[in-house]
Length: 125
Ligand code: FES
Picture 1 (cartoon, protein in one colour):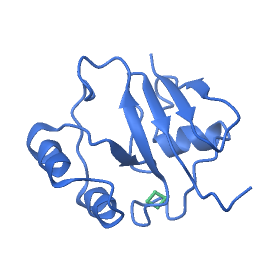
Picture 2 (cartoon, rainbow, N blue to C red):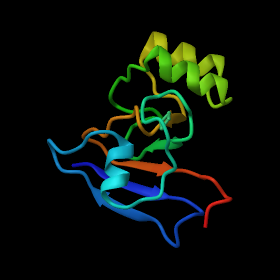
Picture 3 (cartoon, protein in one colour):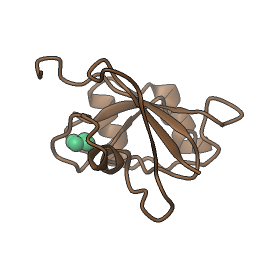
Picture 4 (cartoon, rainbow, N blue to C red):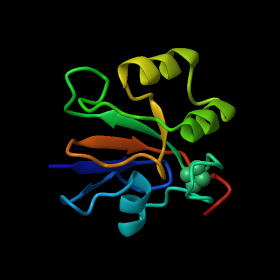
């Protein structure tokens, strides 16, 4: 079961969608499929415009029950936009622990419920 709840000041209310097995893809792909207005540009982990906060709702700790493997590109982009700390990089590299922020275009939805928060570009309507 994978419920993905999207929350943002850009939306009138939170929206929860069910990502079915085999049709999960990235957080950005699920968002686009359900017309959730997460900003994006490159869709390739380079620009940082799709940054989101991911909360793992059913995890025993604040971390996902699944190990994550951040790509060098995602780490570097998160670093450049100031959304990942040195400690989070260490936890990701050594213990496969997910950092608080992810790039929606690089973060895959898995078999767990998550809350995805995003701000977005406030200049857009
Ligand atoms: Fe550019 Fe995700 S859209 S990093």
